[in-house]
Structure formats: structure tokens, C-alpha cells
Length: 598
Image (cartoon, rainbow, N blue to C red; front, side, top):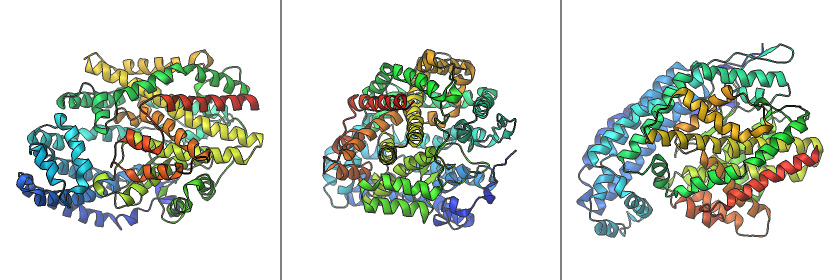
């Protein structure tokens, strides 16, 4: 059986530039100890914020500088663990970083209640001082959330609880990325292929149907084997969300998750309602795909099957060049920065190795590169994943280079716009550049894989978490089998009569997505891809000279503005379902294109 290399066997150029953050583990420990000692200095600000604008400005400066240190200390081992989950030394450092973050959050928890206890008119007058003008949006946002901020004592306790409560995700991650083992997937010749988190996607996209089937089944079976543990961690996460929402006086977890970013809950319901209305489009796609593959019956393991044996194979540098060509409309400086990050500064950990986490993500600190974790396996899908994550990383790059730390984060609602925007731009470039039938089929495959993930799987997961949270909020019983049934029913609706489903294995899909541990993240993939297509189409139409500048302004904005108005300034109104409707037209167009080619 082929083997997956150990971490120490992969070339250094395919790994992230961890030495640019800390030159060694000892250097990290030295900074960790220094930061741990500095937590005590926070106490000197407690009860002193009302002394005047100068003292408040000192607090903000101290808080922002310390938060930057803590976030860098946290990012380093967490990123490392995602790339090398079997490294025992890193496991201990992750625990230390989580503990430091919890202590920091508890120590600074006094600040928001103390600020909100000040006379509001006086506080707003203070913001006219030069040293405090920067924090106008920050204070306005805090005042908007005033009714949900608790007393200093309670906020401090919640800060301390953040560390032990975050271990829910750590337990899930340890099981999913380290302890969970999968039976190899035998191909049609009976040769076992290694099945691990970093190879599953490649096996599911194999041209060998037997390998795909065995990979899909064996992958699901391992999750079913541990369904009780996965259910326990997930339901603990749901219960935590419900308790926190109630503590802060929110109507529901949905309100609690969307209100901090000033996003109306109607945006969520608009997405789900529009998705449900267009489910027949997916039924049509399954049937067209079945005919394209020449099968009498289509199964879930055929969803990622290549539509042509001529799927282009790319080296990592070739993929970078392909993405750069697609992103050319954003300007030479955008492309140059992106290529330098990929090829010189080692932003991307693209190696395939044992112990690597599944999936892909962009992650970094204010003072680090915007790193990417993924497993690059040389096909168009991997190229598209790289383009997606580079959208996140370039968003982070521009935000951190144009915003102070206080506004250096952006909401998840906006985050998924930049990533899907990159994919839409690159895909349009490729569709226009090669009209050969095989290449067009391969490109449709890549496009549908992406849209299937963000416009089928993610809305389905969003419906699942809305159902589980609603039941928990109503104190209704939830068990592993209940979770499986809910998931299976939603997939059955999406598959319709066109797909021959394996409901037991499909039902465990919820356990395979760590996204669910950040409640109501999943639906923002679908809203993100919708906004992305609207903004990309405006630039590709080439009839609006301001479209590129407006989009780049969005990348620079960070959290200096709320998501909905920021997107509206860029050119798309996500308070209505129009962009979602338009993206379903993109989906329909791809199905039409595929049907025409076959």
C-alpha cells in the first residue's frame, strides 16, 4: 500500500514559515512566560478608566498591544498542530496558549462593563480627544451591545471559563485529527489506498469508482463508530451556546451569533428559504451528472467523480500562476503580493503528511503572515482551494496593513466573500481561456464541487444546526440517533429521487464538520459565495470603472464598518435575497453548460 509521508519527510518549501513567527519552541516559551507575567499589570487599570480620557487612551494602547502578543502566542502552536497533529511537544504548547488566552480574557473582562457604567455623553465627548478618535466605531459598537454586556464580575468569570469551554473543540479536534483511524480504501484492482484526513478528498475525486465508494463508506463508518463521542462534544457545544445566549439576554443563539456583527436574522432565513425553493435545481444536477458519468444509478460517492479522464494536473507553482492570471484585474500590486507570499514567503503549508488536519483554512496573527493550511494534490480542485484560502489571506493582509489592531478583524459574514470572490474570478478567466471539451468539463467539475460545498452542504448544515439549537432551546431530547436522523432527512430532501442514498452513512455527515462548533458559521459560506459572485460579475463586466476600487476598499475595511453596509458600499445588498437568487442562476447556468457538453 502506498504510504503518506511523515511530517519530517516533506520538503521545507511546502511547509509554513513558522520560523518567521518564532525561531524556536524555546523562543515561544520565553515570550509565553513574559506575557504570563504581564497579565498582572492589567489589574492596575481596573477601576481607573473613569479617571479621564488620557487614562482611557493608555488603557486602549496597553490592551491592544497585549492582545497582539497573546494572539501571536496562540496562533503559533495551533497552526503547527493543524499541520502536525502528532507532535507531542506542540500539544502541550496549545494547552498553555489556551490557558493564557483564558487568563487574558478574564483579566480584561472588567473593561466593557466599566466603560458602559460611564456617563454616555461624557464618554462620547472624550472621543473627540485626538488619542481617542480612533476608537469611535469601537465605542459606538459597544454602546449598541450594551444590554448584552454583564457585570464586571460575571464577565471575568466568563473569561476564565473560555479556556475550559474551548476544550470542547479541542476534544473534538483530538479525536478527529489524531485518534480517528480509517480502513484503507481498496481500489478496483484490490490495492488498498491509504485513507487519512489529508487524502480523503483526493480519493473521493478518483476516477476509480470502487476506490471512491470504499473511501466514502470507510470514512463515514469511522465516524459512526465514534458517533457517541462526537455527539457528546457537539451537544456540549450547542448547550454552551444556548446557556451563553440566555446569560446575555438574547432571544436565541441565532440572535446571539448575528447581533454582535449587526446582521439581521432575516438574512439567515432568506438564505434558507431561497435554498429550499431551488432544491429542484440540485435534483436536476444529480440526473445530468449521472448521465455525464454514464451510470444507471448515481450514489453519494459519485458526487466528486471526474467528468473527464483528462483532468489537468498542476504543480504548486503552476497553480499559483493560474490564480495570479485570474486575479489580474485587481492590479499588479495585488498579484505580486500574493505570488510573493506563495512562492517566497511560504504563507502556504501545502504538504500532504501524516497527522495533518482535514480541510483547509487561512490563519494568522496581526504581526505574522496570513498563513494557509491545506493539502495540495495537484488537480483543479486543489488549485481552487488555494485560490479560496488566498482570498482570505489577501483580505487579512490588506486589513492588517490598513487598519489598527482594534479593527483588524472582519466578521465571518464578510470573510467568505473574499475567498469565494477569488474562485469566481479565476474560474471566469479559465472558462474564457480554453474551449476544449475536456478542459471545460474539468472546469465544470471544479465549479460544481465548490458550489456543491457552499450552496448545498453548507445550507444543509445550517438547517441542521438551526434544528438542533431550536430543540435544545426548547429543552427537547437530542441523541446521536436524533442527530443522524435530522441530518439524513435534510440530505434526503436535497437528493430527491435522483440520488440513491445510503441514509445511515449520510446521517453522520454532521460529525465530519468542525465548522458546526462555531454556531451559524455555515450559512455564511452561502451568503459569502452569493455576494462574491455579485461583486466579481461587476468587475468582469468591465463597464464600471469604480468596481475594483470599491472591492479593494472592502478588503481594507476590517471591522471599521459593519458587514451589511460595507458590502453595500462595495456594490451588493445582502439584506435582500437577490444575490442568493442570482447565484442560483450561476448554478443553473453550469448545469445547462454540462448538459450541453454531454
